Length: 32
Image (tube, rainbow, N blue to C red; front, side, top):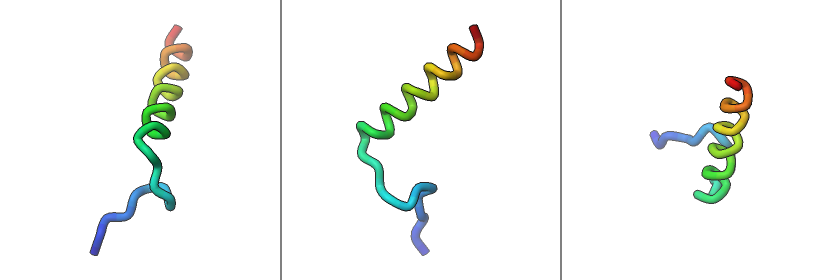
């Protein structure tokens, strides 16, 4: 049985990086 990713479609590295960056920015702003 293969592991399925949380999202149905595969995301490119660029999309993952952009999402991570956006989440980090949101978290940083929340902390300020």
